[in-house]
Image (cartoon, rainbow, N blue to C red; front, side, top):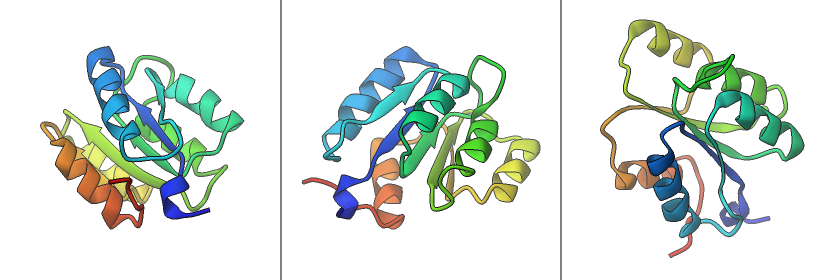
Length: 128
């Protein structure tokens, strides 16, 4: 399996942003990008199909936040790559992200170019 064949899960509660990012990301990966609107939903998806990269908002509705989800997901895939995109630059979140060894922590606003650059920095090859 080449790096291009990696599976991506995008977690965002803002429907318009989630749909837009799903369409954009699908242009760069062979496998369709999976999406979830909550961390709880994302964990169920992840348990059924292990993914290689999670891009997640921190705050989503439900029992757990994006960081809790990543902590659980790493139990299933220790090589999991993770990108957080959040509107909150709070020390508590920053500290939890460091403890979870999050690969990249973006504070909104963030561009698609920033995200794609980080994905390639993590070793993923994108379709062109």
